[in-house]
Every structure is written in C-alpha cells, then in structure tokens.
Length: 208
Image 1 (tube, rainbow, N blue to C red):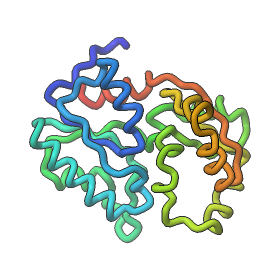
Image 2 (cartoon, rainbow, N blue to C red; image 1 turned 45 degrees about the vertical axis):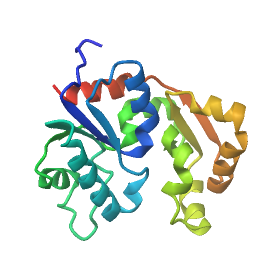
Image 3 (cartoon, rainbow, N blue to C red; image 1 turned 180 degrees about the vertical axis):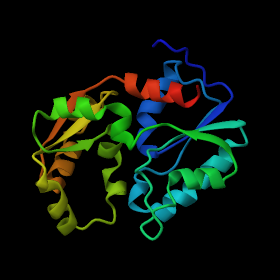
C-alpha cells in the first residue's frame, strides 16, 4: 500500500461480522490498534440494539485510546421513525473523538460496486461475507421461513466474498453448515476469493 499504516493511539469498534478479517489484519501486524472491540454480529436487523451496543463499545474504547475508528457502514443503522438519526448521529452523541470508515456496509468494505458488477456477470446476487456464513443463525434469528422465502429466491445465487478462507475451511471440516444455510435460503452459495486491500485502504483513510 502507498500509505503507511499506523493505528497506534486508536481503538477500533466494529461489527462482529468483521471479526475474522480484522483479527487477520491484526495478526499479520497491519492493524496495530490499541484495542479492537466488537458488537454482536448482524445488529442491522435490530437497530435499537445496535445503537445500545455501539455506544457501550465506544465508551469501552475510550478507556484504551483517545481516538476511535468505527468500522460500520452508513447503511448498517436505519431509524425508521427518524431517518435523520443515522449512525453518524449516534457516534457524535457519544462525545468520543471518533471517525467512521467510509463504506455503505460490510460488503462494500471488501469490494466496490464496480467490482461486484464484474463478479456478478449480470446475475442478481445476494452478497455474503464470512461473518454472515459463520453467524447467520444469529443475524436471521427473527426471520421465519416465509420471510426467507420472500427474500432470497429473488436472487439467482449467493456469492461469499472470502478473504480469509472460511469457505474452504467449512467445506473440509463442516460442509453441512454451508448446506444448511444454502437450504434455508434456497440459494446456491458460491465462494469468490478476494483480497483485503480495499478494507486496508478504508482503515488507513479512516485514520489519515
């Protein structure tokens, strides 16, 4: 990368669906933040709980760092009653010296719209990340089969944007977990190997 990455002095607060990727970046020495804290995965389905946990983890992060980087997308929190209350408002109200990565959601943190269009090859795709495969029963815990049947079959297939090798791991050690998720969605799940370069750039831009 052209920019030198240095996250010392920063605490990271992120969605739990990104745990695999951020822990990978930390282990390889790229993400040298003071502390990485996670909310539960998939809280976009329960925005009131997302707000509660995000505030709590930002407050926790203040104990470790004066500056905080929030790894959440702008579309991850929606207040139906008051659309002006976006995730930026929640972050500002904590009073923390905090910035958020510039992305729409977790899928957007890994691939741009143009990249996804190329990957999709004209197909209507339901995009997944490793965290969604790992935590789908938590993310969709309030969905019944009827809602699943209305949502997923509108797509041609599901594509898992995999930078950490989770699909290979599951295929080798617990393929039934992939099949269970695919059967529930009534969609085939195809892996697509990606790098973490886009996520790295977003993180660096967030502290620049």
